[in-house]
Amino acid sequence: MSFVEVIFVLLGLIAVGSALLVVTTKNMVHAALWLVVTLGSVAGTFLLLAAEFVAWVQVLIYVGAVVVLLLFALMLTKAPTGTQTDLNVRRTAPAAVVAGLVAVLLGVTVVAGFHDVRIRLGDAVVGSPATTGATVFQQWVLPFEVLSVLLLAALVGAIVLSRRGED
Image (cartoon, rainbow, N blue to C red; front, side, top):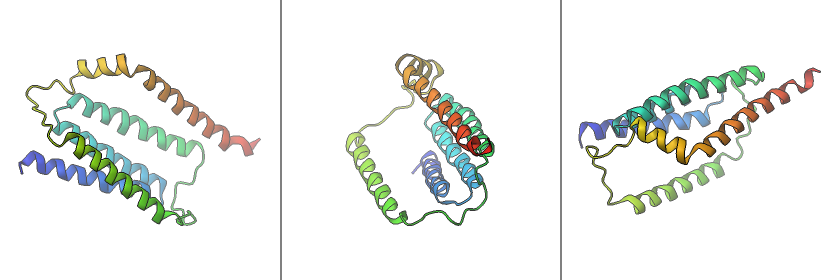
């Protein structure tokens, strides 16, 4: 294994481990901080794949804006941010089984679909700002805008629900 492959595996392990901590921690603020670690390791993976523009967009948009928006929404809606001992954990085993099955299915699908594909990074233009911008703003502009409106509606709905009892 080369040095880049070792770093890739380490970043992948960090991403998976911190993602598990995001969904298993009982403190919402700690979960948001583990999300920062997860998204940062994904950005590092993009850097290893020579997609520098996508890596920095990952850091600026997801780590910078989305996590701040999540923390802002937590504070604005007066959601409990401390440790919550009364969370329902009865469905942990079925959820873990379903997650494992989905992971196996995804792994089998990726291996079956791409087992003989190799990307030569010297010939690729993946990750360049021109390629990424053309893809996002020509082919994916409608889903991008729908997602923006959906996130805004979710935040407004959370504010309305949290303020309902104060009238």
